[in-house]
Length: 473
Image 1 (cartoon, rainbow, N blue to C red):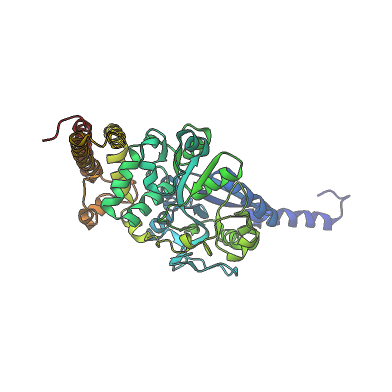
Image 2 (cartoon, rainbow, N blue to C red):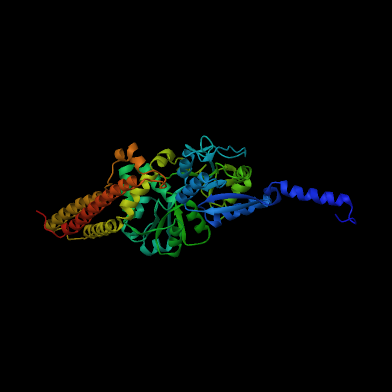
């Protein structure tokens, strides 16, 4: 001890050093809030900046994964004691999966003004294991130059994407690689029914140039003009439209309105900060950020729409959205893995055969249309009778071609059986080798069925064209 320095200064220094060792590390530095999300940077940045400005002692760390990879990351993080604090995503069934695995903690925010439901759809989980902060619909984004160039009406419904003008011009991701695409596929199956839903999806797939590896590649292709139209979540269409690109977006006639959610993850290191972030998303300040052109999502606070741009979709007043069929999230959760495997086996693996059949069907459709518009003198009665017979036969064969192409290799009854659903669980982690072999055997059978029915469809389409030139008895 230096005799020239007063004793009280030495004691103060020792106490300060002792406090440095005793105080928790997070009080000595900025706290960290870890959020796992598939949302792109342009969506999360405004929320991160506004929240950190409100809470300068907090720093957000965003961990970006696709939806299915996010599910795996949460499962792994909790199991290894390294759980993130929040899961923030659009795909509601992903939250049901994590909740079913007991990996989410309930939290009921006290922020006022948030709707409890829209139409028949609950905004939040009934037990508050996840919180709806925005609403999403799924639909069609198209390039204005494309529709004008081909002289076709702007698409209004899914069926419009199955026409000849969209052959090789449709962009779409796969449900296994995109949670929002999975929700779109599931909503089509729920709204149209199992058989008609798969028939529609196969007809759309026939016009796909190729399936993208990421959902954001779809709107990018439409904006660039490398695709005439794409299957997207609403905010991709709205953001690009508001940015001034020559694109538009429409919600189909049978829409599904689904909440985008956020949830507390079990054993997260900072639950207090996580709850504060959830609360912030629901405040008027957080809800208004959804209206930014680069985000363009639908708030869950009805009063915020007073500040929305002109003609901004309002699910609380828009009759189509208000009357949207409630999305059965438990059904989606139960068959999550099955739908992904089935889509991959029949539409992705079987795409070349489906495209070949679709091309032949378009050619037959065009040939019938041209034959039907031929004009002949009134006195050519025998020729007109023969012509009508050829067209009628061609249409019958074309209908058979479409039915063949639309066949699904597994019935709803079989797809709903407990054993089938357990064979294809929502998570691909820790699947035993014997189970994987059983999966591959079924996937191979589904693909073989698809190739056979597509071949039959192509053959019947060729017969339809041939019928237009064959003499009728």
